[in-house]
Length: 173
Image (cartoon, rainbow, N blue to C red):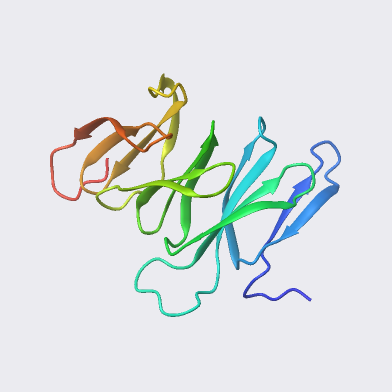
């Protein structure tokens, strides 16, 4: 029996036939932003879970690292960052932004938090920017925030490569 308040499934389907390869039943009531890292054979996906108490802002979030071959769980990461907006993995880091608008880096092997940087204000999502590699050699991540800044960051540490202020107050670049 599927519980509508939890158990959001993630399905892997055969591209050629559409047949189900595997199904993962999560502890979340919604799953968003799946990202497949082919080099490591990992599927990352995030979802909201029911909180174990009051949450002032955000919400209970669980990120899953799943084995691409069979959907088994490699690790989970829990936080109170709310609904996930963007998620990207490369090298040894998984980077995401969620409702509370922190740019967060997790160790892709363990799910341990590596960094957490305040974006300054609302961020809708980020874009992977391969033409401008970060100092780490990975693609850069670009995002605009409601405090009128355009930002380009290195996903391995969340540090700014550059910031540009689009003059104005509360503008979404």
